[in-house]
Length: 185
Image 1 (cartoon, rainbow, N blue to C red):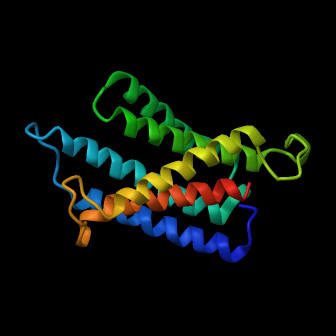
Image 2: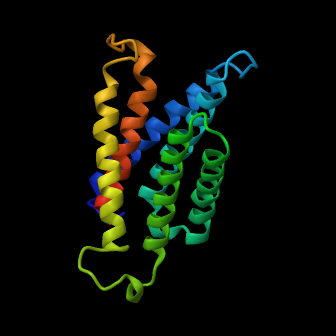
Image 3: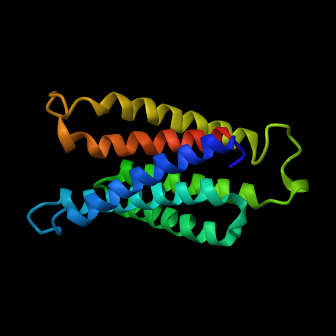
């Protein structure tokens, strides 16, 4: 990341905590059974969010020191899997598409960080393509507002107390993290 060191480390801490929380939920969630179609989708979501949170933390700290092919494989392969799953399975399509956009955005940021200085499209803002970066900022900014609005209320309309709001808090954290990383490009 190109931001101040304190911001970089705070972002790494925030996303690592969210990723670890998602990993813990994945580890402690019951194994999917045939009677519940929602559980496999929730486990898939927890796994994707754990990967993104821990990956964002690693990318924030290590930045361009890790070769672009490593980042591209780490995020590009899951992005392709989520896109294929969204196309072939109607259940959870929107959430899988969101995970694909997130993984593709991480791949884009990694490739932009690894680009040689002469290939950064000669703009003063930093790395990447300004129009694509702007579109991703709008997407993740909007997603963050949406996720934040869902944080305090459950689908039944009651306040989320205890761990009931953890998945929404994790999604909000991921949206904030993606927005902050894109903002520093």
